[in-house]
Length: 472
Image 1: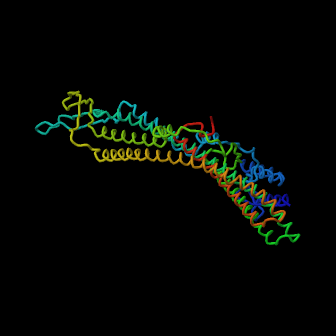
Image 2 (image 1 turned 60 degrees about the horizontal axis):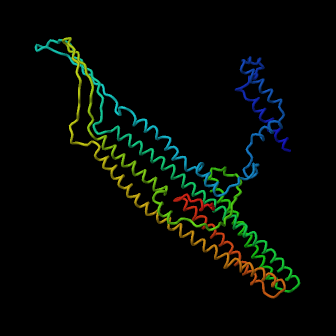
Image 3 (image 1 turned 180 degrees about the horizontal axis):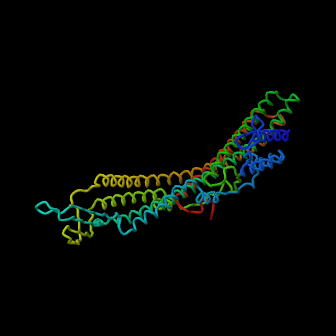
């Protein structure tokens, strides 16, 4: 059927092409002989004839070969295995947010090249021409004067421009390092989100297995008349709820994986396999050391200090531009009498007026505001460190409390209640309540374990302690 359709389509294309009077000569209505073909038209007809000889199925095969397969059905080379360290390392090199600071770093050398020039203003040429007349009115000749002048700053403009270029270079490097550190942290947080989503999926699948067993027993008891059919319906309702939660967990994995691929520069449809445990040992970290070094190692503080320094240098550069510039240069004059005059000229503006006063005041205002923002950011960084340290400690305690105080006794209770329900000693509602409690405890434990890893990843913005990644 497909080959027949392709053949029909090819025939239609050939008919349309042959009937196109713009490409081929046709005989007129009076049966006049056809016009002769030119060389180009003969070649076109030959190509069309060859094309007509190709089977229609061949054209269909070529179209299929170059067609792009649908993304969900395309073949993949296999999943990408990624752990927490790998995710953070990839983000440091591939995160899309690095494009802007990389472009800034690439543009800095142009500013440096401009600062390294000997002169920073173009030379100025002056010419004057006029007649020379005698007192009686007779013209004696023409006076012509030509001169070339070059401005030089008396306020150290070139030196200030070099300092400004250095400040821009420091700002560009600080921006890149800061965004690189942020991308590393964000990728770590995305990995934790994806890992937690997988842990919750596994928990819900395990709960679904237990719920199916409970449903099997409830239906068997209802068939022999040992329990009401409503019990079997209640068990089916619980199983449906758990199945819906499994689908929700799959959706959470899709969203988390998309964010992780984006931050790590991985193809957005590449399957991911996460390696590494969600639950890690609670290593002792140097909290006092982190607090002491936060004002030095915090990436946003380095970036904001570099930006404030660049604004300060911009204000100094504007001040230097407003200071007087001396003009030096030679001039030559040819008088109407035929005499020549060669002079050296110096031009110096009178002090007292800064032509860039308003601009310089605005630059100083921006520099002062930048320094104030640095002070605010320092307090914010100290606050974030304290919050992250508290979150880690709280999540560690919660994780252990759930494991020992809730999961272990709930697991034992579900096992015992399942046996008692099978022999008819308890009703179904007691068993279902225990199963709900166990599922809730498992999920809360997974969230607490994820909070531990999140707090540790956040602390990596202020320290390079490998123990926060589970290392020695």
